[in-house]
Amino acid sequence: MTKLNYHKQNFFRNTYCVFKAVDFQSVKDKRPHFTSKSGSKYYYTNEGVYRVSAHWGRAATCRWRLQTDDSTTQNGAKVGFAKWTSFYKDNEVEKLYFIQKSEFTHTYEYFHKNEPAYNSTYILRTAGDTRKVLRQLKTIATETKWAKYIPHDDLEDLRNHYINGLITSNKTLPELRRSYNA
Image (cartoon, rainbow, N blue to C red; front, top):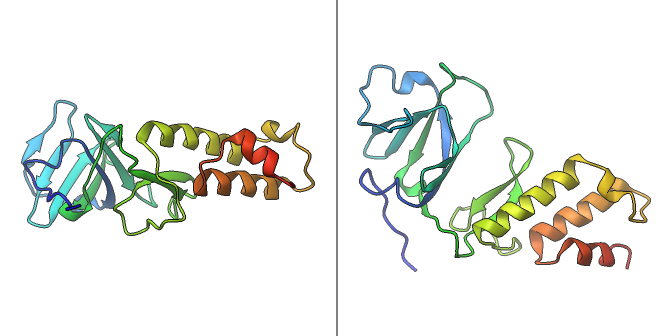
C-alpha cells in the first residue's frame, strides 16, 4: 500500500496528524497563506505547515492533535507545526488507530497505524471503536467504583490487567473480568 503524499492542496481533507507545539516566534512576521472560517491560520513551507488555532482535535474532516508539554498560548491560540510526511489518511470505516499512553500527557490517546510508534502488539480499531475504548480506559484509569464488585487484592494490578487487555486484545470488559485471576 503506497502512502499518499500530502501538501498544501490536500492535507486538510480526511487526515490524521499530530502537530508539534512551537513558539509563536515561528510565525511572528509572516502572513498566513490561508485563514479558515473558524479563524485558524495556516502558513505553508516546503517541509510542512504551521497552524495557529484555539481548537485542536477534530477540525472539519480531520483529526489533528497538538503535542505539547507546556501551555504557551496567545489569545487562547497555540501554534503547531507538522511535516507533510506526518499526515495520514483518516476515515470512519478502516481499522487505522491504536491506543497507547502518551509520553506527553500521560493519558491514553489514539495514534495512526502508519506512525513509527506502532507495533503489532497494539490492536487496530476503527475511529468509532477507538473512541469507545478510550472512554473505557479513562474510567478505569481515573475512577474506582467500577472495581467495587470485582474480587481483587490490588487495584493497580486490576487496572493494569484491564488497560493492557483493552489495548492489546479485542476482549470486552466482561471477558477481561472473567480472565482476571482465572
